[in-house]
Amino acid sequence: MKEASKKVFKKNRFIQKGLFLLCLGFFFVHFLISLIYTLPKQYFPAKVSELAAGYMYPSFYQGWSLFAPDVPKWHSDLEYRYYYQGQWNDWQSSSCFPGGEGHPVQARIAQKLNHYLTNQLRDNLYYENKIPQFDKVVTQGHYRGAVYLVRAELKKLNQENIDSLQLKLNVSYAPKPGSGAPAELRTVEYPILSTQQAN
Amino acid sequence: MKLEKLIARFDHSLWKPQAMRIFQILVYSWFVFNLLYLLPAADLVWGRDSMILPLSNQPGLVNNLFFLLNYMRDLDVLILSIHGLALLLALFGKLGWIPRLVVYVTAGMLYFPAYLALNGGYILMWIFSFYLIFAKSNPKDASGILLSNFSYMACVVQFLLVYTIAAWWKWTGTDWINGDALFYVLHTEAYSSNFLQSYLLPQEGLLKLMTWFGLIYQSLFFVFVWIKRTKLIWLSLGLLFHLFIIFGIGLVDFGTAMIIGYTLFLEDDWIAKILGKIKPRICIRKSTTT
Image (tube, rainbow over all chains, first blue to last red; front, side, top):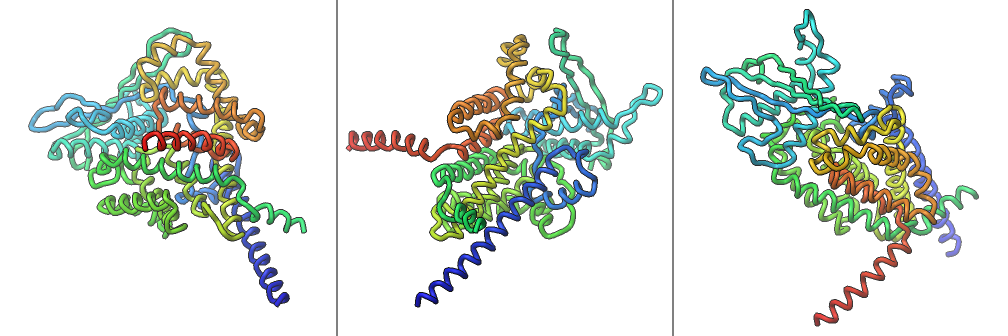
């Protein structure tokens, strides 16, 4: 009887040891990959970063560069107008709910998108003979996201049968600390989209 | 023999049963409140009228699962209902690990189609919900204790990772080192208010001190949180920091998620003391009302 219980105990400890080693192994590998995934990419070879991303995304997707390495130095607001029955309507902000009421999450969605749009303009807008060139801007996902958002707002307003659509981004750049200067304003009007393009 | 001793440290008893139970309750409660907050706008966030352009995803079973709502928006009510039900079951500790697994899966399914509406607070809670799948609140066998302790350890390391990585990124820029970060944050309408802008923006010295405090606090969190003598003061400072994020910057979900993470570092004897103080009061109230 004693022998039998000893055997059971030994077997249980063996399973326990296996479970412990499995957990420990997963723990170290998981957090090592998490570290590689969340630290700046330039620290690691591209292949390593790619492998880490393959494991982390989407199951453990995360990023902790909170307001870093530098803080955005602007506030931006996306506006849109549409052409319908022979006239353009007034510009209206995408972060205000159609009709003036709504859930605060709509403003958050618009703000986040505006942030990406501003970054995207900084990286992709260029000038030729002082004329802004949008070819690299309009092919980017966030611009398409902005058009999608505006279309959703127009749907809420029952204004789906518009002829054309145009977006505009107002960016207010914060002055340098201590300068006392007012915020610098800049407006970028995107090219007009026909309904077909907007869809 | 050394391995046996190490295993015994893991599977003999729960390291922080009280803190872990409170942490579990708070994580699932956070999801419940977040769900209730977003529910009135569910259609705009997840449904057919969503304002968010679906992200493209790679093929594969896991990808297709997490991105299911991206291309089947009509399933939003079903997934939200399953998520809500699983949250309640997990909150009350019913049906073991199954609802905890369902919470993790459905929370992921709800994140990707709504990534513009959610932030790091949601992601942190989602990652915690993965580790919590393995945490039993009252394990009876050695394997259950071992898994629960690993779960606790994973939550702690994840939380430390957030602060350490956030600090690392900040040290690679200039705004935080110069002390200008908070000045710029408060200039952004989305993260500020008229009151804060009029009161804090002219106080440049104070803003610099607050910025440096945030940077140093995040950088040294993983050291000071283990020193028992100063832990309470350290966590209290962090609490103030995150209350500022909640009420000043307006990131309620992120601020509360970080505060919930602090419960992992509470000592069980502190919790016992707090509970000991609360329980007699409840008893007194009950006896006076009867």
